[in-house]
Length: 243
Length: 243
DNA sequence: CGGGTTATTGACTCGCGTCAACGGCAGTGG
DNA sequence: CCACTGCCGTTGACGCGAGTCAATAACCCG
Image 1 (cartoon, each protein chain N blue to C red):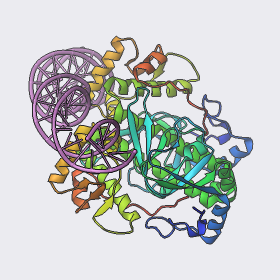
Image 2: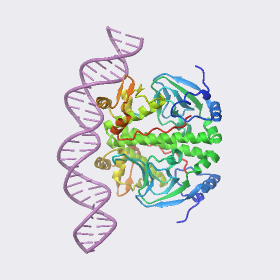
Image 3: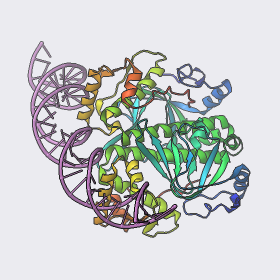
Image 4: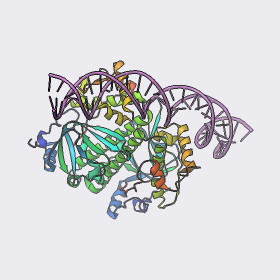
């Protein structure tokens, strides 16, 4: 497994991401400390730890999660290619959640101290970094509203819309089926619902032909219809910076 | 009401905030576009709007909130002195939530374009800005875990611990009573509980002598005991940058 | 073939939402 | 000075959505 250059980064020609200039690519390449591949189930970052690296996901999927003292688990977000991991530790000094691989993943590794160089020499990239943090904040705000205000079907529909749109744009397509290798338990823990109830709710959506998630594939024939159940607008995701 | 200089900013000698250097103060002062006072009930920033300003809270309290299509309201966070408002719009171009004043508030106003100057000329301040965004992300992550995993009493206890600690440090004291001018409905909407249930839960905590919130005052005789009910550590808030 | 993980389904329970009524308190106007 | 009104907190009765328990498939892997 040889390390690819940032000039050939697979994320560049990939759907939603704003490409870097040649100059930026060169800078980032000097920034890159290496690459890492992990097996399913690996903990990439640990809650409470002070990781010396930050990562960008090149391939594969994972989860951000927090665990309460008594073992209950909350899934904070689904991790997909293009996501930045470890920014909190990089900025604040300590991770506040764990990141775990669900499929095999390939990660781009940066050293944490390089952040300072970035802030000092590349204001546009520093701005992008803040953009990413603000976007995450936005998403978590929506999540809070969902867990606080929406009922069971609405929650499941909301989550499926969100992740379907993210997955679809990564596939550069407008297909109605995308790979979705998570377990129902993961979705349940993301939505604050029990596994059983999540399962039954998924059945209901399937019966209504609004969404069919089975055998690792998520099929949504009509996003708008599903979004309506979720009481949300299926807002197109803005193009976004990365790395 | 004359405008005070950043050199005399009331937040500087105030508990949790990391003071700026003289140089930074001078820079920030050139940054400052003015001051604003608002009455209770005023909407300072509107969801979906593209506000040309960002603000730092000097005095008073407010709420961040999101409203679903059918009118349900989710309180995202309680806004206290030192909080930065409008960063999302400043970075991403559009507010994702509304900010409303609950008491009379005094705000420090910055122009949004100045952000670029800041990123270009003041990397430490840019870093602070990202720090603030990351901290907000951290808090929202905890909130998600609370709404997703904790039951009624736990939620209320958690929220009271959080806000009590924030309020107390602003009072520079270790007193057991702090002002808390919100309504029970606000707390209910923050926790995704009904008003009635929130009220009854508050009664239970009062009966157990763990927390007494009445007449606009929150009294917590033993933070650790309350935190235990909340299933959380009463982590001391880190000192933090502002502006 | 056996053991482990995940999905599915039914029966029962309970936390929390909803409805509704009442009391305290402040503001307002006659 | 006192009705009148509106907002907020408080309390009880009742019902539903979602959690819990439990049993059965379906599937994968060694």
